[in-house]
Image 1: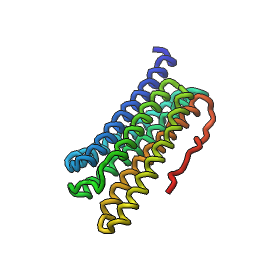
Image 2: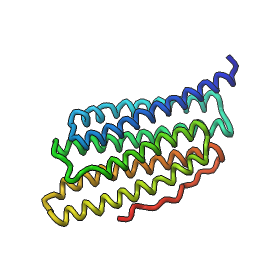
Image 3: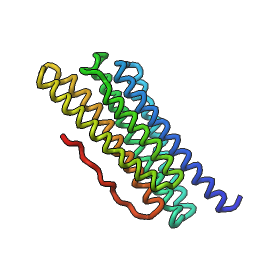
Image 4: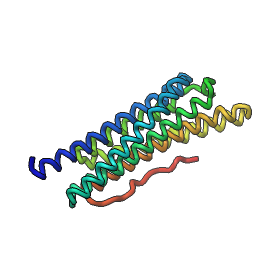
Length: 224
């Protein structure tokens, strides 16, 4: 096997690890919101336990990138691909932490049902998961147009978060005994808002991968 063929194989394995990590995070987000909707303490515990697997894979990706740089001394596009993969893995690991955070909230709720029907929070999760999958597709394809389109959807999540915040404030104003239960949902929504923010980081890395420029996407902050 020639040096270049071996290097390309190593890059493909690196991408595969990032995609595998993305799939694990996607499942964690989905399960976390399902645990919240169903007050499923057992599922919440499973999410928390499995977060360690996401953490381990992140370190494996980081170790792989360091070895590739040290052994192959890549330049230009290859080096940007490796650096982008390492940073994307870090953002994925943080998303896993946010999903775990929702699971911890479920445990703290102790099986008590949410203070209001869950419609908007699951919608936040759906959008965030779509963004995550599409951002990773853009990473593999090096598609800057798709990366920009995905990043723009962060505003959808921000708007939902603002609506949730305002609704929960109204619930608390009407009955202060519901403060704790309302705050649990607010914290869950905040975790989803942060997941979408992390996806925009991935999109920025796709732009960096193709252009060598690293710029933040403009985004509307939640209006709260």
